[in-house]
Length: 299
Image 1 (cartoon, rainbow, N blue to C red):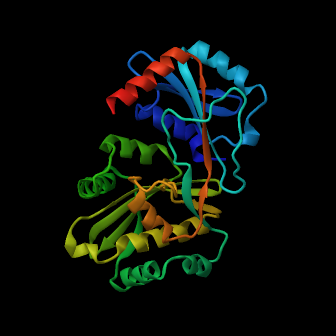
Image 2 (cartoon, rainbow, N blue to C red):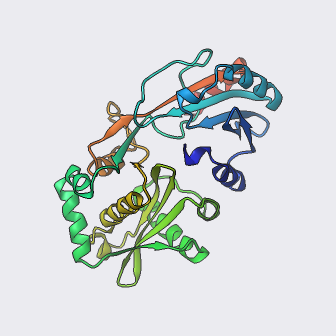
Image 3 (tube, rainbow, N blue to C red):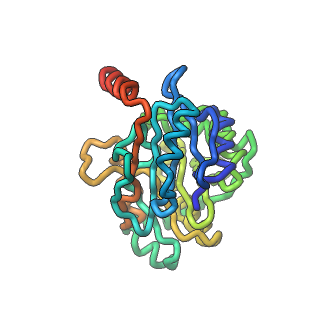
């Protein structure tokens, strides 16, 4: 089970205008998304191989006709028993990747001492340093005021680290619509210096969005390290078995924009895995080829 295959997740996507609608087919939520103003594609995220029915392709072909979709993309994901497989009539590729094939995870069934032992010594030191500096971690209510605090810190973070951000309304909808989400703050003497968003469902917890101050007076307090550690303990208390750091670079990609993020995450855990495969069924092959050609031309 996954938060990405829940009704609340689908409602969040619709209210934030990321999808046109969702269709429930063969116990799987399928998202209808725009390619352009007039063209659409279908997408399903986090479907285990063993959950895909034998007649799934026939159903997808028919659904593409009904919804007038150019193509259908499916992303599988398995933390524990992943192996590369093929799906009949599907091509192993993607139009847009929503989760990277590789991720870093922590086995939350390990003891706290074992989890700490798997971290780099410097990271354990940073956690202790933040504690000594009296940084406090708290779960924040998902009020508009607190979400604005997160958003303002996100603006500082994106300006500093040069990566993409979402709108304030998106983060607000994300937190308000997902009961299985948490907003954690790192507080130093009454000032919020770091704020992170997490989701959790069933046995998996996911580290989604992070933001921190650019003020040099607070950067040496190592708040993100303590915040990460306190989050890990929360997920253990909620009986989660896996903590997913989400989005790390592939080991052979030396030019990935995720390299610095990957370095940060892999010093919390030694466990990095290839967990996902993407497949596409092209319903309208010529139009799909044209879209791919135009995308390459724009680059």
